[in-house]
Structures are given as C-alpha cells and as structure tokens.
Image 1 (cartoon, one colour):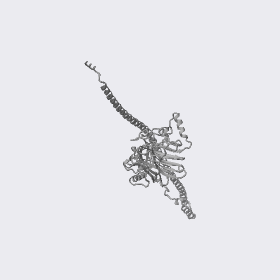
Image 2 (cartoon, one colour; image 1 turned 90 degrees about the vertical axis):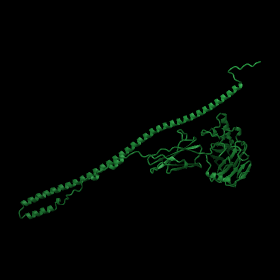
Image 3 (spheres, one colour; image 1 turned 60 degrees about the vertical axis):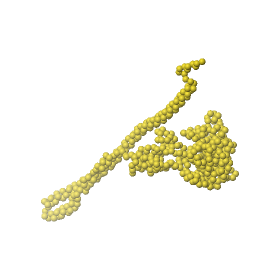
Image 4 (cartoon, one colour; image 1 turned 180 degrees about the vertical axis):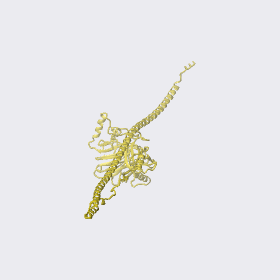
Length: 522
C-alpha cells in the first residue's frame, strides 16, 4: 500500500523539538543580553543621578558661599571705614590741640605787648611834658626819674619775636601711598590645588601614608587639611556616601600618616587642600586606595550555649541562657538577631562569609566551648589578633575546618589547629593538632597574633605586641578554614580588619626558607 504524502506545512517531531530547543537557547541568550543591558543602564542611571545630586549640591554651595563672601567683604569694608574714621578723628583732634596751643601762646604774647605799649606811651608823654615844663632847678631830677622809669619799662624787657610759628605744614598729610594701596585692594589669592602622589603613598600595617605636592611653589601656604572616609566602592568617591568625611587639620608638611586604623571596609577615599593665613584652596582630586585586610565577625550561631557573643567579644556564661534566648527568638519568628549575618552594621556581604546559621544541630556542645569566625579562608595570607582575660581557666585560638564536629575540642582532631592555654590545676601553654600537643617554652602573651597562609600551609602564632614567633604549624589544608576560638570560665576579644604586619611578613619569609626551633607537630 503506497504511503500517503505528508501534508504540506508539517514537520517531523524531531525537527520540531530541535527548533524548540534552538528557539529557547536564542531566547535565553537574548534574555541574558537584555539583563546585561539593564545592568549597564542601571549603573549609568545611578552615575547620572549621583552627578545630578552633586550639581545640585554645588549650586547650593555657590549660593551659600557667595552670600558668606559678600557678608565677609562688607564686614571688612565696614571695619576699614571705622578704622579710617578713627584715624581721622585722632588727626583732627591733634590739629585742634595744636591750634589751641599756638593761639594761647600768641594771645598771651599779644596781651604782654599791648601792656608794654601802653606803659611806653605813658612814659613818652611824661618825658615830653617834663621837657617842656620843668625849670632849670627841677629838670635834672625829673630827667633822672624818667630815665629810671624807661630802664624798668616792660617795653625794653619784651621780646619782639613770636613764641610760636603760624606754619602748620607739620600737620599736612600725603595719602598717595595709602591711596595706591587701597586702589590695589583685591581678593586674596587662593592657594593652588594640591596633587596627591599615589606613587609615594603607602598602605601597610593598618596605616596609610598619603603624599601630595603643589603644582607651583607657594611660600604663603600655612598648613594643609586632609579628609578621608571609608567606603566599599572602588573608583572616585560618590556624592552620596554613608560614611562621613573625617578631618585632619594643621598639617605642616606635604605628607601625613594615619595610624592605628581598622580596615573594616574595602577602600578609603582621600582628598587634601592647602590653606594660607586667611583662606583655604580647593580640594584635590579625590583618590581611592584599597585597604585590603581580613575582616570577619564571630558566628554566634556556632557558639557553645555557655558562650555569650557580642560582636567581637566572647564571655563565658555558666547559666547558658543565650541558646534558650536564641531558640525563643527563632520560635517567635525573629531569627538570630545576634548573628553577624543579620547585623545592621553589615554593608556588603562577602562571598566567603558562611550562610546565616549552620543549624541548631551544628552548635558546639558538651565540653567544646568553641565559636567560629564567619569568613572562610581559602587563599592568600591573613592576620588577626585576640586578647584574652588572663584569669580565664582555659583559652584557645587557631583555625578549623567548617566540618569540625560539634563535640570536637580545638586541637583534638585533624580538623583543627590551635594554641591552648590551661590555667586550671596546673599552667600549660601548648600547640595542639590531631590530639597531639607540644609544650611551648615561651612567655605567654596577653595578646596573640594569628597568621594564616592557606596556599603555603603556614599557620603561625605571634606575640601581638613584640611580634615574637610562638609557634608555626606547617600543614596541607584540604579545605577552607575558619578562625576558631575556645574559652572556659573567662573571656576574650578579637581584632579583625587587620593587615599582615610587615614584621610578620619578614619573619614568615625567613621561616619559609629556614627551619625553625618551633617545628610543626607531625
């Protein structure tokens, strides 16, 4: 029987499935391309929004700064007017006092002259009368009397020279120089904008040394102002940022070191400006420096029920009430509010941080008074420090695999390495791993630094203050590790966000090429 021809327009089921698969693949590619476009547009929109916000802020600043500059200028001119008025009054007063003094002297001399003239006229009249009327017998006597009167007359004892001058030229003024100075009045020269020298700037040992230079030499610069802030965003500072600018004023040189920093965010923004005695210049172009450090928190969901965790501090609590409180919160649907994963302080979730909570069955229990960090170590080198209460009966610090059993004590299995201090019954300080211990014949510090180089397999412990090497484990880590801590009847505080100290780097380099007296446990 002949086969019926296939109706036109119909294809085989195999071809239809292939077409559908290809169509789905193309749709997925188009969808992925569209997602990328959306992401690009969202980033660009955020950049534009930030720039618009910056422009609006600049417009507000222009209004505020121009109003302040106008008020300052009017105030300066009012002050200048007041000073000129004061000088004018003083100089006018001096002219009046000089005029009054000279007028008094001249009036006194004029009165004396008038009196002498009157006396002289009387003597002249008396002499003329004596000459015309006296007889020969009385004339000699009259002439002698007139002669004696003339000798004693004020007119012959009077100085006919003025006591003061009528010249007032010493009170004349010439303000030509001052007028030129006033005509040369202008706005103060603003210092140039500094340029931050990234090649000379350094981030090390939780310190930042920032260097800058001026484009032109300016002998009138009095000091510099440095501003910095932390951020989790690479690149130029954003207009909107959660962290405020911190200010350092009165810097005399062109270099400054910020020390004792905690690098709990990925980057820091910096800017600097120059100031003379009266005005500050513009801020330099801001720069962003990476502040790479090992930042972690304690995972409260892993801690033993007798440990009370508050941020980076842990305290032994014999009542063990914390776990009941957590369970009550979970029962009420509030979650683990004490867990760092749910802390409002968290800004950016690190991909290496463990998920929020390991489950109630994984909480350490029995005699494993342990708590783990929340960030996995799977590469590079890391450093952190822990300060413990010397009255603690037992304390341990080290690293452990995430798979460490809930009953396992630090150093008792192959899944953990630690330094352990025992203050109960007898004092011992030892390095522990795989249930083997090596007693350390070194002074026990109150603050221990931990260095972990995952790839090279180094786990070293230091006196955090003196950087004395206490012990080094040489291991081959087969999976990522976590910071691990244990305490019994005591407390401790962890410092994270630390860079590997330069001294530790040097010691580790030396330790990797030469054998150490603190050999690793087998």
